[in-house]
Amino acid sequence: MVSVANDIYSQVGVNLELVEPIVLTNIPQACESTIHGPISQDQWNITQLMSLTNGTDGLECYFIKAFGDEARTLGCNCEYGMAMATNGTGITLAHEIGHAFRMEDIYASNDNWTNATVTLKKIAEDEYPRNVYMESDWNLGCRGHGVGGGRFYRKGESHVGLINRMLMNGLVERASGGRDITMGQVHGIRCTGSGMSDADWKIEKVPVGFFTDADRSESPVHY
Image (cartoon, rainbow, N blue to C red; front, side, top):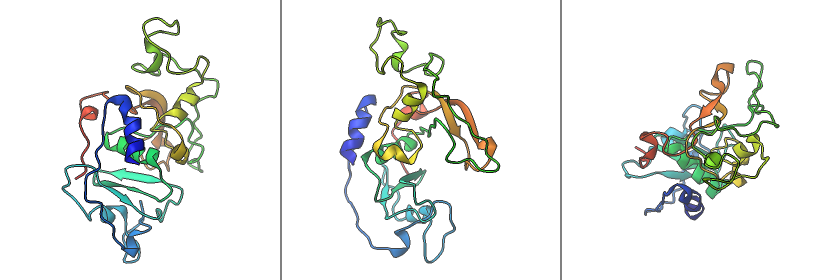
C-alpha cells in the first residue's frame, strides 16, 4: 500500500517511509469502530482507536474490519490518525494521507447524500474545463494550442471526467479510481460539514491540490 501511495505522491515530489513497528492486536471492540457513533463497551469510536498510539512524529494508520456506522466507507482521517477498512487499497491510503496534507474531498455530484433537506447539486456532464476552474493545474501552460506546456488530459474531456480522476474524489469508488493530484484548487462540489444539511454543500473551488499555501507544503503529522 505504501508503494502504491508513493507512486501517486511522486507527482508532487513526496516520498513516504514505512516506520516500524507494525503492531498487531486483537481488540474485539476495535474491529468495527464507529466514525460518528458513541463510545461504548462493545464498540469503540475511532478517537478511542487512535488513542492507542501517539507521539510517533509521523502518520498513524489503523487497519480494522469495517466501520460500524458507515459500512461503505473505506477510510477516514482526523488529526489523531487514520483508519482503513479491509477493503481499502493503496489508493485509499493515499487519499487519507491527502487529508493529512489538508486536502479536501471533491465531488461531481452530491446525489448519494441528498435527502429531504439536501438539494441535488451536480456539475453538468457537458461542462468542460476552464482556466478559471483550474488556475494552477494541467493545461494552463498551452491554452489548448500545444505551446508552453504539454497536455495532461485529452481534448474534449469533461470537467466531471477530471474530477473523477482526482485522488481526492470523495466517492467510495476511489478504491480503484482517481490518482491525480492537482497543483492548486479545482472547481467542484465541496462538503463543509456533515453533509446532512443543504448549507453543507457548495459548488466552488475545492482545496484538492498541493502548494496552494504554506500549510499544505509541510509534512503532515498526527498527534
